Image 1 (cartoon, rainbow over the protein chains, first blue to last red):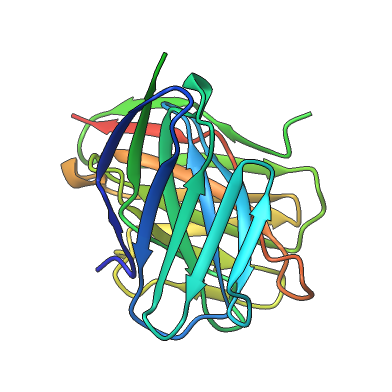
Image 2 (cartoon, rainbow over the protein chains, first blue to last red; image 1 turned 30 degrees about the vertical axis):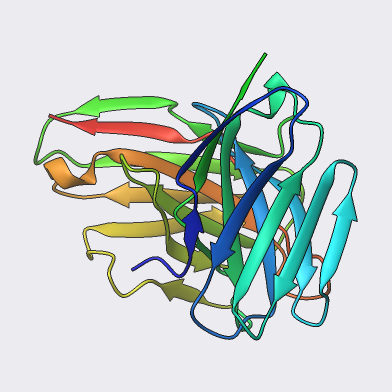
Length: 111
Length: 114
């Protein structure tokens, strides 16, 4: 079964609005990562937050992590049509560095 | 140059056939992975491999086997293909140690079993 669940499954917003996606996971983690997947393409790493961090920023991205609730959120500010993609959270546990992915959020940004 | 390349990009084949998907990396990372993405976009780890160990997800049928001819390649062999094997298969690379824990994904191979 998937380690994480993401919500919403799909999100449609207007350009310029902010988009927030949430991710929940079940076990302890070393870190949590967010990836983007454009249609028909591979995944691209966006941002990594460690288990001892609570918030991290990268450009228009803001990620939070609440280990007590086993949840994370990804905020994309001032969205653009080019942000249209699927967004996945992934957790890393143990030394194998294997990623366990959430179910993904399909974001559509309307021009 | 693309860090991770996969061939073929598309693969259409009949049930029962044996096929291989190739993965090549040019970043010198020591760990390579295979993931399967189904029609609902669920991504699942299949294997992780470096020159020290192969870790297999226990749910992967033994019809699937990774083979690494050298550190830059990790190919995926699939025997006796079944309809349920239809999916997109992604190769990825990463490091097994240090603080750099992100992974780089290939473009995917879309497998359709008829």
